[in-house]
Length: 329
Image (cartoon, rainbow, N blue to C red; front, side):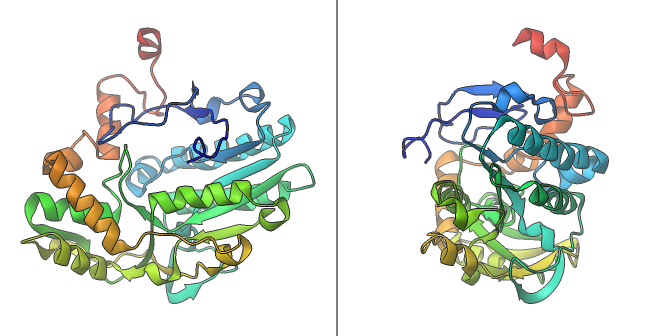
């Protein structure tokens, strides 16, 4: 999307998931292959803006070694912001999360709601916001985009996300397989709409987004997990809802009000709904011949893929690429 709008884009990524492309191709941009923990000021000098997405981005990875989650998601993120400010980068767009709200019940939450994270991942996101917001000044303008739970098709799709996961289970097994009791509330948003939000913030007048936090999604797209399961069942033929034997309550429960971003950014509005997204996923899974072993095994499941890379000696236990791999590349 940024390329289509004429921006010059450079990527920076450790590329742990380089072999996890499911469909399509990635955008062809110059890329710095580097761990976010190792970024130096020369890596960020000369850029007008940074969109900071890097991190351990799901709860199984976050729970793998919580101290590593804090080191990568929080420590490295705050350091990146400090380097960006020192290098004269004017805009800093941070991928925060509605996971900040954690255990919040069923009331609609605005951006002023208190943080109450219940996972290492959620805590790391909240801690970055607390650390980076005070850095804002006339020359450095951070914005915090608190995305709802993502879903939808992308080249390196994540199958651990609730909409993607339930649809994949339904297509491959006929079971809309719920691993919780389905009662928690969760806001959801399509990955394309998340990308649109970043573009909108990047191109907005500075005073509209300076040191602001935005819930990203649609207020109407808050669902109880069981409602998503029922929707999947209506779309994927011959599927039925089934609860895992150990399905229990999930402490993460929150509904968010997403109207603020539209008011600030001149009517910005996500375009996708859960129904359209599930239909897109189902048709793509069918065309690709997706199998259960693909997304529940080491091929695409993030934590299983990382553990296999460690087992094979391609990553060390701190999730850094081993010297042998660096030499081979």
